[in-house]
Image 1 (cartoon, helix red, strand yellow):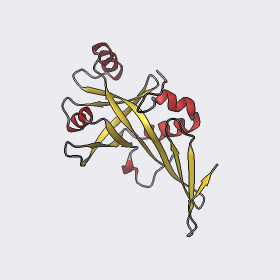
Image 2 (tube, rainbow, N blue to C red):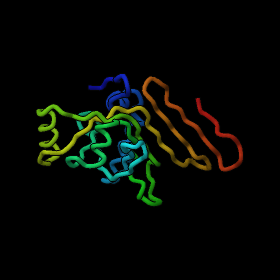
Image 3 (cartoon, helix red, strand yellow):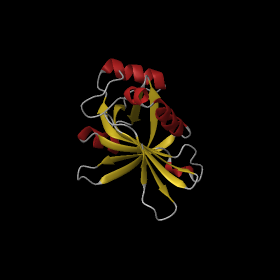
Length: 172
């Protein structure tokens, strides 16, 4: 299951490529239950919804109520951005973490039943498996704002921006 697809990578592929970064991201999501999901409405405008993210079986899953607006958005256009709880106030341990990608709906009855049993929720509900296209962590280190970015097929990038007027600098 840890493969890279045509449009993104599985959580397992990300964790294999950047294990320390993946651990930090997963821990940040684990600090809180509720997160923010951005999807695209039918007219192309953004929709922001609350959601729980579920890391299970080396994958990242999104579960939703039947025919919820966000589920219908993802069925129509799977692109999304998921932000670890932005309501955490000043307690941003682990930094600000965002995952972007494509949500692929799980339609196999056996897989849905297995997932429902694992999470202890009765069907029906929508389940989407996440294919990552970008993972970003933004945090403060000393006097620098640090932005760390990973995308499938690319090396992780780290950009630092100081509090002075100097231009951002990329670490190698």
